[in-house]
Image (cartoon, rainbow, N blue to C red; front, side, top):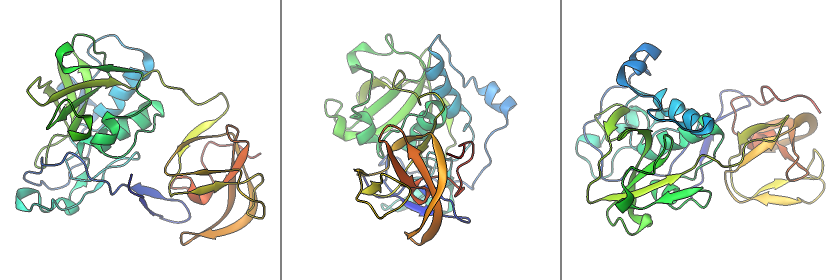
Amino acid sequence: MHRTHRTLATAGGLLLATALSCTGTAMAAPSPAAPAAPAAVAATGCRPLADAPAQAQAIVNAACSQIGVPYSWGGGSVHGPTYGQDYPGGGPGAHDSRVKGFDCSHLVQYAAWQGAGIALPEGTWNQARWSGATARFTPAQGTAPLQPGDLLLWGSDPANLGSVHHIAVYLGNGRMVEARESGTLVMVSDVRLNAQYAGALRIAGTGQPPADTKRFMTWGTQVGLRPDAGTQKPPVARLPGPTAVDVLCQARGETVTAEGYTNDAWSYLPKYKAWISNIYIDDPAAWLPGVPTC
């Protein structure tokens, strides 16, 4: 996993993912476009097209909320569209750094996080091999066992999930929502059961935040979790990379300067029985919204 870069408007931040995905799909780059209005989204048929648990439906609804947003190679994060990266092979996808949108893996990552608080890793190949999957389906099974919210996979070698280069969210009835390639918008498509179809995985059914907590994503690597709201005592644990954490409350503590930012807000993580500086919570606000004071 690549380390992410964080930019702050004031004391909070937004996540800009640098890991590239949906390789080899860059085509013509459009001008940035705004997300489609709800009526336009409904007109596309982007919604759960079969019965599914509420968590799975929420994943679909989050993906469908981005219908009409441009494809951008390397673009997107758990928070929404971002400017992408220029396709290194040149050609019609060479200007995606000027296109604000999603590539396929970041659309899926956004839908999982915004819809269900599920933190997927960066990159199609890592998402395909995600250890948190609650079920897996082979190419031979087709779409018969799938439910809305499942993730569909395509790879250059379908037997090797490390070769997966495209990923999409299943809607049901043989339809899916995807960020397909440069020059297109996030769209509803027919599922392509071709020679590169590598099966599917189910992410719905994973754990939800405990009562009275709110889930956030961290950023950075080897972030220390402390026994109190300060840095004087050794860490009780370290987060190796971006991690979903459930925050119970927050408090003012030691003022910390790190990664170019200064903040005295700390959050308590009951799972770890430890505190984390809010500098390492990926949210635009330094004082986390919706989280009570300890």
